[in-house]
Image 1 (cartoon, rainbow over the protein chains, first blue to last red):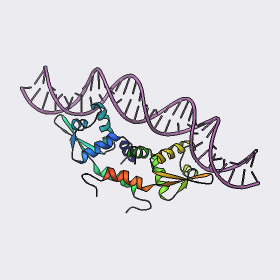
Image 2 (image 1 turned 120 degrees about the horizontal axis):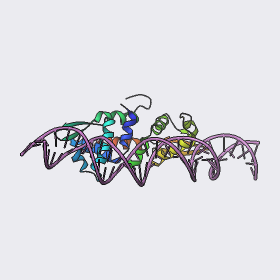
Image 3 (image 1 turned 30 degrees about the horizontal axis):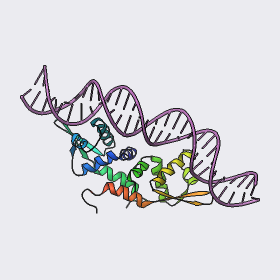
Image 4 (image 1 turned 90 degrees about the horizontal axis):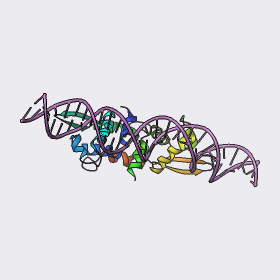
Length: 89
Length: 89
DNA sequence: CCAATATTTAGAAAATCATCTAATTAGAGT
DNA sequence: ACTCTAATTAGATGATTTTCTAAATATTGG
């Protein structure tokens, strides 16, 4: 896990909201884009950063790309910073 | 809590390391700076961003400024993103 | 008050980021 | 093969971030 990429990915509000939306279940790029005031190309760039951080995985379904949340990376990254003052619980 | 500022502050590796160092206890700006290959003015800018995010608090002790970790903001921000798929625990 | 120490603020340069429009790729159905 | 829909990549531009050096501020001690 490239922790730098993860936190960099989390630094933009739109990207955090994408993750929050995906908590409810997988969603296509288009459906996700409907929740924002940004153009699809812009959202596409955000999807890419989330994918590079492995915070989401993508799967093709016909002409659509379906994005899935990868919760474990989120837990590892955030948990890693939160916990471990002197030892792991 | 300005969640945007918090995640923006967490996006830089030096700033995350500052927080990690402060887990062991309060430390002066100079002591913190000794752990990095960056100049003091640069570190000072990082301290400011952490302070604006309320991730750290500062207290003067003579000519030194002592930085303290504010763990609760970290917990709120990260916990807020981690938890709450449909309800708070 | 003056000098020394600790740290910050100011200003500038280089790098990175976010965003848009236009063009391209990929798949499905006719 | 053609067309429609879904989404991406390319290229450009403006804004923000990171970093440095130089100068300024604050506090203590003689």
